[in-house]
Length: 295
Image 1 (cartoon, rainbow, N blue to C red):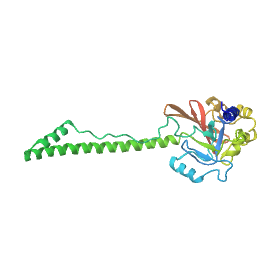
Image 2 (image 1 turned 30 degrees about the horizontal axis):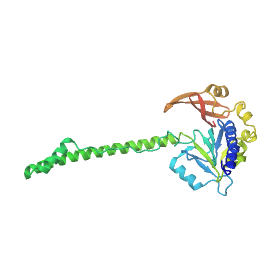
Image 3 (image 1 turned 135 degrees about the vertical axis):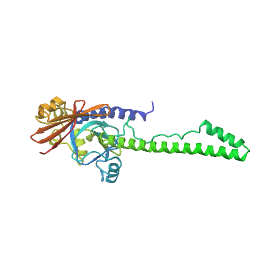
Image 4 (image 1 turned 90 degrees about the vertical axis):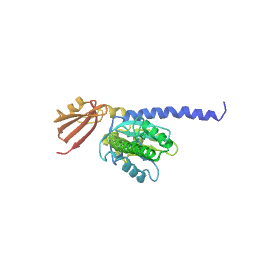
């Protein structure tokens, strides 16, 4: 083995477990926790790029462009669940409410294929007959019939193009709606590699503190992930709670309704509480989002 390979292998062996262990700790601490973005989040897996430690951590021009292109999936000040933390060599993905539309399996193209109407057998035969016919009157009659058939084919093509345009617009609308329901993400990007000091809950909070509110309890207990996530305080709501757990906190709901989103059943339950009116959304019985409005 060449000598230059030895330091490389040693470095890989030394750093890979660190990243793996740090990612696991970050997952344990953040995933399932509710945070509140301080800015609107675009409805795309492109999310919001943040470059911690640089003179310009957030490129607001690019951020505005993504909002304009994809729409707002998560509003500023809207409590949102952290659904995934992923650590890469130069990137940390901080995914919210699904991570954003455009991941593997999401339909992003609105194009609908169209095939021009083919020539009929009669049209092909008329073309051949008209080429062979020498009598001017008969040739003219064949050409007139041929023109009628071509005009009908062109009208069919026009009808097909109209139907395709309508279908593409419908697909665009479906994609726009799904973008607004699929969450978003922050991408913490580093020029060289993710610094070790960032691979802790407090490091993530420091990097995103300008753009995300983690709540006083989270910021106070950033060094204690296990105890901070295991037992929410009395009366506290957090994403991931079951219907029975929310009912135990807020009491009997004043109303309940269901709707289908694809193959999922979404239940909206409303409660009257001392802090105001609470609207909670559950997917297959698990709390995924809630809002609180004053009476």
